[in-house]
Length: 185
Image 1 (cartoon, rainbow, N blue to C red):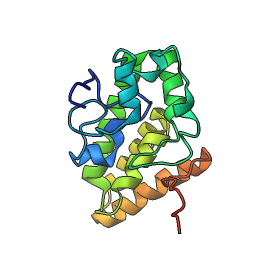
Image 2: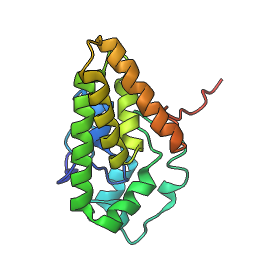
Image 3: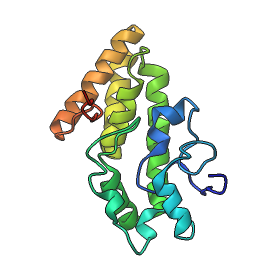
């Protein structure tokens, strides 16, 4: 869809945090409406049919049937907070949400640069996406404190960070894994 462009491609039409997606981080996808990525998206086509709305919640038909079961399964990025994040945008405004998302993106990049032993990119993407910003900031303070004074290897730092994220997620009843559809046999 050559005509599908958006002003802020890091938060999708449908409520995904594209800026926290491993596909975006690896430059395989520019984010929703950022260019060549995600061209077959039915929601993007729907947006064009409805005058190029920037976010689905701005449509008179929101929530439509496209949202039925939207958070049941994930793709490259978790879909579990889509509806919750849309409601948050409606409550605090897009500018405030974009500011929070920018902080999360910065924290994610820092985590990947300093605590990824080559096996945790998806884990950090999911964790930063699903946990609230205040929890993520608190965790990063703990991680920096606990890993700063010791001569830990990268692997030891990664294990420590992952354990702290898992502990916080468990407190919040959040599972830090993608929900995959069962394979058809």
